[in-house]
Length: 93
Image (cartoon, rainbow, N blue to C red; front, side):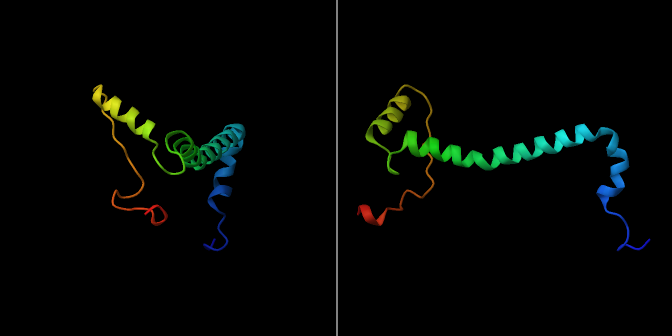
């Protein structure tokens, strides 16, 4: 058989997988569900950060004070931002 007419890997494996058809379908279903969840996770995280910690893209004074109080209480806190500290929004200058 030449490479052009040789069956693909799924056709070669199918006789062995036929017995475990249900398990194979469940495995593919779980893999697809995992990919969907992984794809949606950044949207959920963005909603949590945008709607809970910041307001209109700004850190409110109350949130900053709470972070400062945690630091003074000995809780290690790290403020991570998506942009460098030197970047300023032009509409707020």
